[in-house]
Image (cartoon, rainbow, N blue to C red; front, side, top):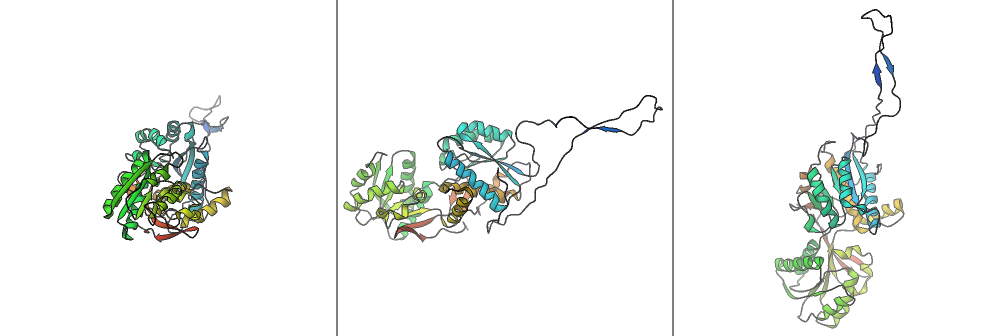
Length: 396
């Protein structure tokens, strides 16, 4: 749990509330009547202090001044660094907002997501931030649902959203739709695609086909590949039809492996398109093979400032997705202005159509509980990335 005292973020209009420190002294009183006292004339009551401390109940101590919010992330095991980065981000957000009405307690999902959720609810938390992994969300969701506690997950698996679960993760469908629309507006009509096998590839393929159709273009070729070495290059060699742009639905490094084959074949001058995965690669701009490529993602403008503050405080660089932890706290603090302490979290506020502002720009949740984000389109150019189509500031 982090207690915060720092400058609030601009534009968030956060109300500062002072926490009330209340000390309660517990004592037992008894009236003693000495022998020989006249009937009906008892002396003034004598106070006897109790011996020993007051009994302590299970779980967290009672807190009548702050909202209880649980953070469920892996703090041990193979994903501990990612989980700790998310935890650090929530602490930094509390410091930046100077929030004194939200109390965040961390629970380790690596030791069992269901057990973490049960402990969080038993401790009186009214909102769950996390978990990170989709399988953990599936374990937590029914427990939280029975308790009437909303779940604000960092997963990008749309299959776990809904019925009290909201996901903040960056989904491939939105980035693909955005970059395809930008390409179509730039004169591209014929598209090709390279997508991996597996769940991500299936969803990316479906999103790609729908996005191209909605934009008024056509898909002239589509190839799949597995994760074996050079598999994406082999798939690129199988693209025979002429096309003006090719979507490679994978990380930047994998995509770069396909470009030389494209340039020797039917994609000599084709524009390479990427997905939101490229934004997690800090070296994407310096990858010469991707020069001229476009991809859609959240903006990095505010994230760069956040990363500097994170390094100064924690002595290490944050994971890119840790910004979701920061933004989840901003959202919670905003809603806390109209959330009475001790009452259930007002989940209907999560679907406000005006959305919320955060490090990653404007976002809002649709009826299925999926975060809809305002994305920008970037171009790899000159050893860096340049924004060629800015993200909208709001959803209006």
